Image (cartoon, rainbow, N blue to C red; front, top):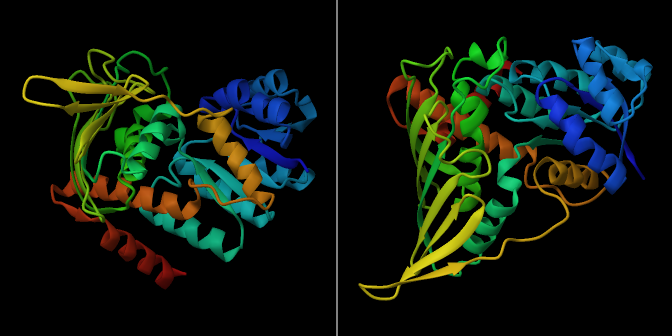
Length: 356
């Protein structure tokens, strides 16, 4: 049985959902049906009308009205993080399950409130944090979980992009606080957790803003993480680099194992092993195959879950851990001190329990 949903957010990244993701889910998979769409800017209605065939009368500027007038099983929220909590609370009021773009919210306090409210209402929620669910990262993660080359000890990663002149004027990211980690770094922190197979124990982060930046907040970072299972991770992130060395889907991850080094770089995965002091063996790893990756796979898994299937790995509990690492990294960058991630999360959950 098809699951009915309301798309909340049609501009910006919501346009990508309309052009690249929803047609596949609706037409190819046939597991979901869009019944309405919401955007505060009526000019963006064309994305729902043109790409997913929604009639004009099913496009709304008011999310409450859309939920009142259309029966839906879930909402798909693709709006700026500062608006997530408002939209999630509204969805819960109308008894909907929730698929929401990353992060859960723009503050740790809001993440904990959302977590409590979703659980209290007995609804299901997953977060579309997509890059971990692409073909090369999934291939690398599967290889590490099998311990084919022995125990993993540490992971090094790099993202180097140039957004100097690519963000359109007026984009909300220009004025965001902690924009790099919230919008970009969260993907790579999530990937490090998945590759390590563990939640984070401690984090130390340093962020900075180059003098040529046009953004308000820091756009570069260096992060050191110790995972609860003892794996260590190093992350370098640069948003306004002079060259696109390791951009989206071309990120560099290197995992050091006892009997080999596993490398993901520019959508290729390989294993390097030194056979002696003069030579090395390079093993090119075939990428895993499936019919969909990234956002299309995430919404596919979500629809299966709310229909009685298995809980997806991007569930709310997992993403609360991801957000704990994210906001602990921001806290570390602000204070200049390492942060114990699980204690950090517990302190916010305890505050929320007291306030609730």
